[in-house]
Amino acid sequence: MLRLTPGALNSQLLEQRPGGLPAELSSYGGIGPTSMDAIQFSEGQARTHPTPTVEELGSLREQGCGLWVRIRGLENRGLIASVLDILGVPSVLRAPLLEVPQRPQVDCLNSAVLVVIHRLGFSATPGDLISEQVGLLLLPGLLITVEEVARGEAFPELSEWILSGQGVVEDSDLDDILHFLIDDILDDIFPILETITHRLDALEESVLRRPKPKLLRQTFRYRGNLRTIRSQIWPLRHQIQILLREHQTLLGKEALGGFHEMGELVQLLYENCEMLRNQCDAITQAYSVGVGNRMNQVMKTLTILTSIFAPLTFIAGIYGMNFDNMPELKWKSGYFIVLIVMFAVALLQVYWLWKRGWFQDWTAQR
Image (cartoon, rainbow, N blue to C red):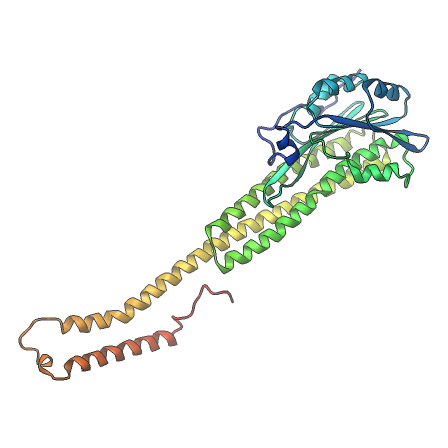
């Protein structure tokens, strides 16, 4: 009988999916077609079963060898329920595997370890984050992975390594495979953060060169992506620590060491997210400073024009008065003399402002 331990499973749906739907799910209306296969571990060898029936899976389970069942796509819920029934999966563990989107979690029960995590990535347009849920369940002699998206082979790199015979995998090594799978999903986040880093560096340079509202919108979009990534990885750190403190009997020494490293990996990912969020804040501040400098440059230009034309307007206003006793009005060359004086005054002011550095563009990139 499955007895819950402290911090045991609580199936909690997220209010909304972290990111958008992958192209594979979009083409199937949100639920991908179901496919499955299995890898059996016996006598140091791994043998694959491409399309097993429910009865074949039950027979493989009865043999007592290590078994990794990979389910992809959640369309055929009846088939998946039949598979879980014949494999002896308790009903309390099924909802987190089949209901999407679930919160990320690492839950430990007496004889089971359940992990729900989202595989994150970018769509065809960089900056648009997508996600797909992956559920992993470790039972004695049994590892089940349920992927929301049915595309190609499940975890191709690890599967190729196992089936190629490069390493000896015993039926007791399912706990190591579990932490390898989680580590593989978490490692996919680093290229995302690297892409965001390059994009933010380009945005920062563009904001300093010529701030535009669309650059600020792009910055807020990347900031939102970073907030989504952080919300998906940060809960794992605390839950991994709880898992390690409970001394789960399903996890061997190597697997426990792998989970220790996983906690450090989650911490590193979180710190990178925070660093990039601070860079987003710096870009926002640089945008505000850039817009302020451009506005100051505009005001300075208007001030220069006003200061140059103010004395010219004063002179023109004096000689625009209609008094009879104005001797300059009788001068034969008075008009040209006033023009020369006004031109000289304008040149003198331009020279004086230029010497004081007023004509320098303070918004130009140094």
